[in-house]
Image (cartoon, rainbow, N blue to C red; front, top):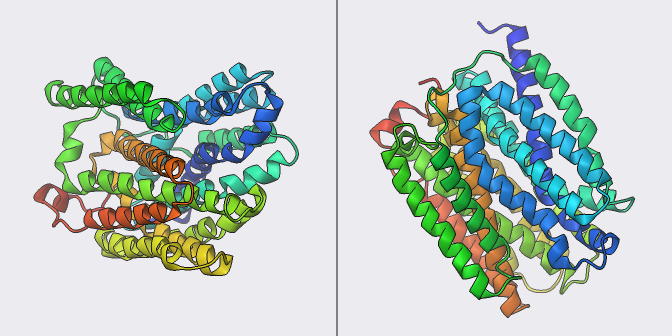
Length: 457
């Protein structure tokens, strides 16, 4: 029987890793609302130059997730997590004190390096801390924190920027320090790690493929096609070389055995599809409110807030349901609700918040509560020594899906500024794709490691 002390320690571990994840994800979204203020402070720099405060973080984070996951599994998830958190906190202080734009962008890149280590290790540490019967609730809580971080970024950013844009970075310093101190006290010192040497060639191929692809997608709206197309082609070419390398290397950066389990394969596809739609819905709603509806940025952020609030309330409950019914049932509940979140603004007429935006945000919040725990729970089907790298693959899918969603929406609205209907159609389409990942019957490898069992294999 598990003692009270053991149970408390497990939830303390979850609290620490969830807090660190909150910081890392928050910094993906909180800067958006600060870009106008940053542009004024760093004039005559234009929006294209200032946007690299956001893009540099996004691209470096996506490119480093998989290599950071392998390093964590090879040298210890606790050690990697604490090091990544320390780097993130120090870089946050550097951002807050940055005297000019190049220094701020450089500090944001260093922040992304720390976040790339924190994100995969946080889920790996959370899964390893809990027995099989409690992993659904644990992943639900972890996912809820991520949803709240993503959705509350614009709201919190708007409040902080009212004082100074430096506060959006400065507030992370004491939080990172507190999580670092708590992590040293509660995170387990013994863990299963991968054997073998670092796959340097695989790391470089992963960095190149993800970095070039994300750069092309992120800058697709601002750069000419003659520059974007070669970058995208180069990224896809390196991705193909990376796939070939994985099959030939004896101990590659991403073990092919991860994709031998259908639950993990479909989980990766589901995460990418869902976040493509999520990014489209969030940005599309923001642009609708601040554009045709002429809302202030802060008012628009408050209008979006019901989504993450509902997601935060639903995710722990959905996590417990996940432990009972498995990921398939949770996805088949969440995906139709996510589709409805796109249908409501597509068919609702007028510009009434209570009719168009509010129900869409609430539906998304409930859908996210079911989908995110179910999709990220697939990290638990990988072997124990691959928890961090498996989590990193899922996090990379999240970044790539988000980048595609933003690039697609910006491209569509750039050609037809009033064509918000296309954004809602994308949401519906990605909801269908997400639901499709739950339809295949689990193969034999997957049936031996159910999501509720996690990494006990």
